[in-house]
Image 1 (spheres, rainbow, N blue to C red):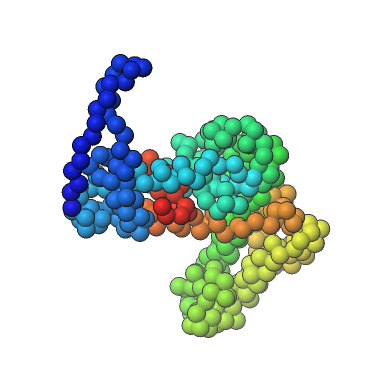
Image 2 (image 1 turned 90 degrees about the vertical axis):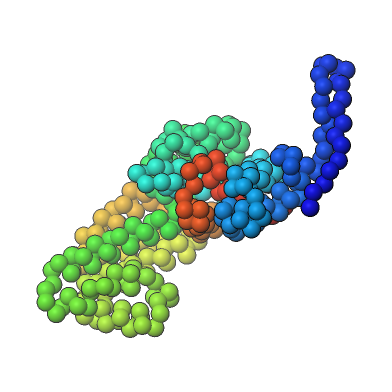
Length: 334
């Protein structure tokens, strides 16, 4: 369907230039209406640009530009961010350790900034510079991994923000320690004794609640056959209790008891993990304070959503398009 109409051209008395009247129902691309552009944008939230172009018989670049216009309107309607609780993480945008930083508003549950050249302190400072000193001073909590440049940049630019280390990043380090124990046990044993450990890496690293019946049976067999792995697994499963305490003193007592359980167990990777937690205790224990009880799963969930966006497009070379996709991924449709 085509719509034909006349557009008036007027002479501006102020500047003396000839201008064309603005037609409100047209998109930035004058060959399409805003309504149609919004339809294309909504479809691109769940499908690839190529699929939409094929479905609507449009050029690939046209669909992409209409999608960009749609997302820019979404961001305009969302307004400028004024975060009080932020989540900071990095994502890989291509091979070769090419990183960008994503900052989220954990109270509004949406990403608010994507940028930087890497995951350095200078790159994160760009976010605080764009946010401005008054808004940066309002931030009361910053959730991040134990990456030192993120901590330094936050302390320097948001002095009133408490640092909270992301639970999932901490547990990832613990999972790596358990995997090192598994490898050492596999190397120590020989012959038939290895058959219980071989091929059970992800069974051992998974939580008991997430295992299938077959996985639970395999895990029981493994833990029954190797005492050291059994001890390491129980220590790994129990450590998650640390985030259930509502007072720092109780959390500290639990951690001291957990460390005491490591004595005479010959679990060097776990001892190194405990030393790391000791060095970063303030950021780990921050969660025990009532005012810091925020959803820690949002940042990890956002990372999964970003990976889906990248995988669906087989990688996005246009970084501005990727930025818009990320920043609007949690916004409502227009």
